[in-house]
Amino acid sequence: MIYHIIETIEYEQMKNQQVYQPLSLVKEGFIHCSGNKQDILDVANYLFKNKDVLILEIDDEKLNALIRWEKAPGDRIDRTFPHIYGELKTKYITGMRIFVKDDQNNFIDWKSTEI
Image (cartoon, rainbow, N blue to C red; front, side, top):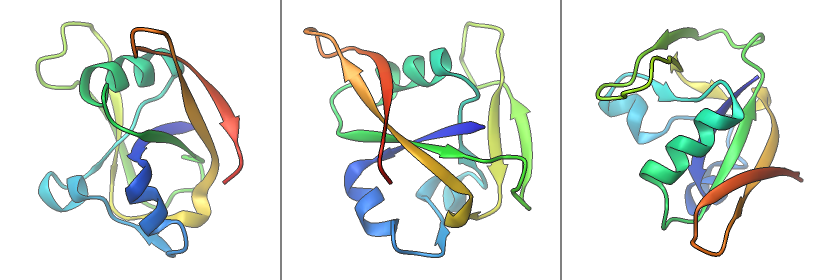
């Protein structure tokens, strides 16, 4: 499984679609994802701290699109992130998670929720 952070309003707009094509696919040529919980929390705290976001769980073994594990520009930690090079058919979104925050508004955990 790989994970993708999506703003709640964007999720509401795409949830009944056959295909998800975020702006990053148009601008950068791929969909940003993370491969584990710690990375998704780090990304959320760095880029989405004051936004209303969800986590999509994606079955990467069934995707027809190319997935490349690549370093993020400027990341000081030696790690790679999965990037989906192509559209994401929503049938491969197998779950959704919501973030848990602490009293300083930091993302500290996630929990499963209904799609």
